[in-house]
View 1 (tube, rainbow, N blue to C red):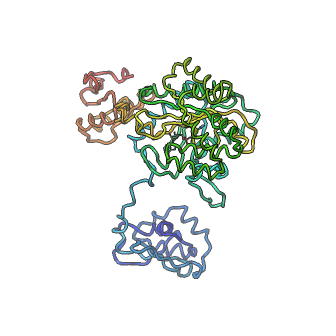
View 2 (cartoon, rainbow, N blue to C red):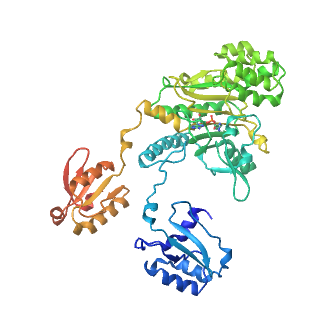
View 3 (spheres, rainbow, N blue to C red):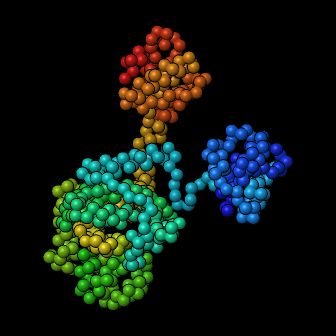
Length: 531
Ligand code: HAM
């Protein structure tokens, strides 16, 4: 038995008035002999009132058979614990109350959440709601439907052999039923699972979005955490880069909406077909494509000799390595065309995409960069990554085309493309640039209703109810004896627009006083005219 369990089991025997001397009492939640056990227990708990024993516990006690004394093991809590549950006597378990009980109870738990995770107290939650509100608004304005899936998924959904970092960072374990499960590190496999579930009934193209918490046991850096929320938008059933163009339009629309410009942020774009074309020239096998992409993705993070070593480890020939690394240095589509030819799929896709970006009006956000291949194994075509132009932060968002993921999960392949956009890096940028609206510092109620005396509490309640029914958000002062100074301070903290004061004199005249907190104006108003 763990200490916490035993504490629960013994808890009802402790009472604030418990005697300081160790004494033996019966624990009601341990197996007890009835009816003898029950009466003994009631007698023993005479210091705390009998009403402490809640009905279900009593019923449970009456139902339970007596446990043989020897079958209840002795329990000794950790050093300094409040309780020591001694071996049961004649079917009754006994508890010795420690005189130091009060001291032990005061031991403070760790107030921090687990490393790499965050709490969202109201102030942080307002910010999160603001951010997610923009994510949702943009996705909806592009005609996407929202979905969700469990944070806990089957581990097999993430079993991929390309050596991706993400699979090494899994929070995975066996559940109590011995099933291998994992906290999702990303939303795409869950999305693919849902799409497979829909089968042929899915109307195409399907445009879905989600905002969900993801877990990765990652080394913590600025904007990288062990849990983060990701906004995803994905399209199923569109083969052409028109889908990519639409998604990039959504991302840039979002940036613009929160005040980030193409001077602050850019989006690097390339295509895995570049690497594919290079690899096929050097006869590198198909199976090696995804692992090579995973290694090439580390070009900016690792020194060149390490990249060469990892590629050699995959059996890639020296000449091919030279070819790969050379191609990854290309910085213009023209250079790419010179290398692969104008008809190469990668060149055609990228040229079309850049021309669509002109049509939408966001071409200034895009930068061709052949070294962007992305670290996830499933991408097959265009890939992109949002970055801060100051070069201080990790990737802001990333995505691409993954036409073969459904097949890898045992289903029938469909064209798919999407992106993931984390909440952590973007908030670093928002804070650096001071883009957070100041209204988020406080709550956002419309009215504070304040009865200045207890005799006016009933009308105050009626007024609050009426305003709420009219759609206003109303905070009602719940405690008597609050001074006006307190009420106005509280109204400011809640972000109230108005304070509706119920004072004896005004009420006698059939009015309430309304103070507009922005203009500081005060007026007497009839309650029926408040909304
Ligand atoms: P990803 O590049 O691994 O792609 O993650 C997408 C975004 O999630 C990153 O650009 C970053 O904003 C955020 N992110 C990832 N890991 C962390 C972390 N440890 N802490 C904070 N933020 C993080 C994917 O996950 C793909 N499934 C995206 C996708 C959707 N591709 C197609 N559809």
